[in-house]
Amino acid sequence: MKDNEQLVQDKDYIGFIRSIELSTGINLADYKETQMKRRLTTLRLKYGFQTFTSFYDGMMKDKALFHEFLDRMTINVSEFWRNPNRWEVLRDKVLPELMGIGFARLKIWSAACSTGEEPYTLAMILAEKKLLSASTILATDIDDGALAKAKQGLYLERSLKDVPKAVAEKYFTEDGPMYRFDEQLKKEVRFQKQNLLTDRFDTGFDLIVCRNVMIYFTEEAKHKLYQKFAASLRPGGVLFVGSTEQIFNPGQYGLETAETFFYRKSRS
Image (cartoon, rainbow, N blue to C red; front, side, top):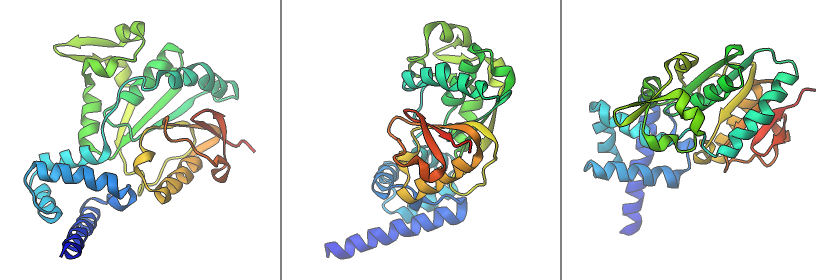
């Protein structure tokens, strides 16, 4: 009896995956099943849906619920200067090296940018290094809700906890219980919707930042993404990943370790 019940549950979830892919282009099978299924089951039960089939039907009728599904699926948890020592390496070593090898202008991409903390961190660092006017910053995410929040530029104080005090005072202003990001720097970031797994990537990037996202993907999906990221970098360009996302064999992608969690595309 238990086996039959499990089979029904598995078929329910598989059907849900197929329906989501057909209607949105998002393939949940590319994400680690145990984590994703647990996360979505919690959301489903929160709203009283007994099956994934009924949950899908509910999402298709309720835009707010669908956006909450996207938010839960993409784990929009971010903060400015996350893992500060890694951003210091970017500021003090990686950016000077990129400029030193003749990159007169920097073409930068923040992939899976969530609610904007990462590309805005890049904008602040570039402004402080007086490189912002010689840079372009593209920021992409699959979640319309996250992109809308990013464009709004309003954040809770806790999101700023790792921002150096002088930088926070320069680029944020209190707005009621929230903090508003600098309007001039906001204009330097171009936000765009994108599905990393299915959409084509632009090329010629000097720096790609994709942090704390790969851990949710299967090994096959990760392999595909690292190939796509490497192809999008110009020779000498750098991929910056999260603190739990070390690439153990970067050479298979034509990359080499530049610093811990930074990988440079071979110039040969």
